[in-house]
Length: 375
Image 1 (cartoon, rainbow, N blue to C red):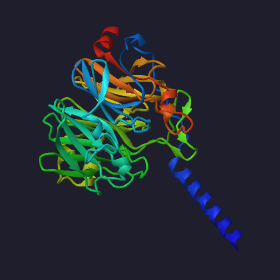
Image 2 (image 1 turned 120 degrees about the vertical axis):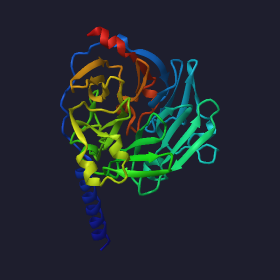
Image 3 (image 1 turned 90 degrees about the horizontal axis):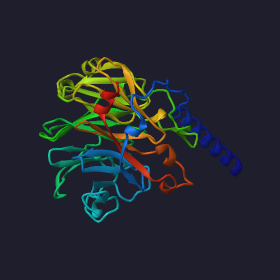
Image 4 (image 1 turned 30 degrees about the horizontal axis):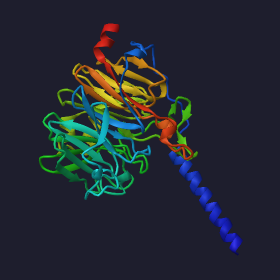
């Protein structure tokens, strides 16, 4: 009888693993949309070398910036300030995960600058804890704003991945990549009235594509059970706050929607869904940014490249180099594009290695006017 129960248990476990594999794995190959680079790889300027993979970046000026260490690395610091050739935990060591500060970070990946404040999105470790939006004065390090999202906005299994802020600092547009729960969506937060809403959940524009990322030869399916294939991930706001651009990493299309429609609480969900625009083909994209001319900058993680999509939809490879290991976070400052290389394919799910085996990890910048000159 005991053997029968053991057999039944093993059958149940096997069935569960098969079900997980069917739901959480992909095998398709993404189309190669890379081209001949406009610029030589020597156009990349190294601005930082780090002992752990960087996540996102927010540039304050040409001498200093803020960045996160990617949660999938093994750094003890989550948020850091770079100045004078080195970094320090920001706003202090006590705020880092496990620190003594009440309300210390759980897991921060994305950060943005608005005015004198650095805004941080604490994803609460895939929603195990509440997702929070925190703001610190960049000079004093004082906490100046804190908002805890309701559970119906960021539920268990969510992944608050990236965000953008309107020019007036009032509205926040956030992606829920939902790697585990598989219910991706956009979230809008109005700082003035202290309210947030979850939008476009499971709309085609936020869903992952049926493709498995392959980065520098590494297939991104962990333990044969989970393909690293999140929902809506990259996000960018145009210079006039008119359009929000977004897409999932492995989605075949780039999408946009008017911010006025996202902010209209009286607009029915079906009407909002019909107003989303599919713009055409893109690369397998993580980082994303839009310049004042309407060019959309996309990472191409499979081909170690940075790509520009022009206003008419044409894709142009700006840079390509083996040194661009998983281009991740983007930040535009004046005519420069800063980007982090998180090398996630070399650290994610590899239990027999540490970050040090693949260090150092880089942050680069490139002058975009050099791309114009090269044409």
